[in-house]
Amino acid sequence: MLPENPRILLCNDDGIDAPGLLLLERVAKHFSDDIWVVAPAFEQSAASRALSIRDPLRIDRRDERHIAVYGTPTDSVMMGVLELVTGKRPDLILSGVNKGQNLAEHVTLSGTIAAAIQGMEMGIPSVALSQAYPFTEDSVIHWETAEYHAVPVLKKLFAAKWPKDVLINVNFPNCKPEDVVETQLTRIGRRDADLIEIHKRKDPGGREYHWLGFNGRLSTPPQGTDLHAIYQNRISISPLHMDLTHYKTMADLDAAFNG
Image (cartoon, rainbow, N blue to C red; front, side, top):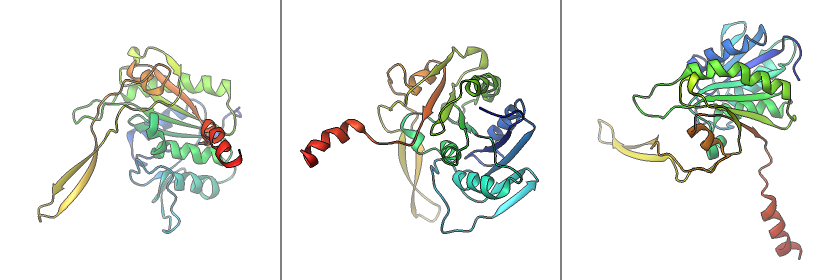
């Protein structure tokens, strides 16, 4: 699937200085020395597939191959592939490693996955990687788990190959590397309830404002889903694609419109 010493473009949604991106660069060096980093200048979590079409895109060139884009993850991949990575196009896009899981219905919100989607749409094999953690104030993020397991997971993915219209979503569980049970192929799950809470507060001037946050409630997902795998200390691998059509409903509606 990949040539020898592939050109790899790295991106994320946590920003170019995020520890997960530094981790991902170390992982990528196991596969190539032709690595480029083009990532948002600041955190763009939950940016989904936002594309800057009303604002200019400015860049901060840290060095020849590390470039911050003042825009979204999708902006960054487009700028990287079409403008900033010189010579030849990337052979592979790796997005992450995200601070926090990208699972279930939240895959549609994720800027990490959006970067991989953009790569896929440009004909480049793309993988999104995320490290789960519990979103509590005193939580410990087991970055070492992603770093330890990412290389063997990616080696197996590259050997197996996947279709051009598919991206791969990898989530590492919230545990130490030695506590990972196994790697599991999963489908997208769905949480029992919305995790988003709205907190209403007042600033020092007495003006009301609202803050969105996660409540951290766990769900009761069925086996085979990405949520269930992560809860069981398994690495979750989900192949995703962009066809959101619900074919059963389409067939049911056919009778109403064409019957």
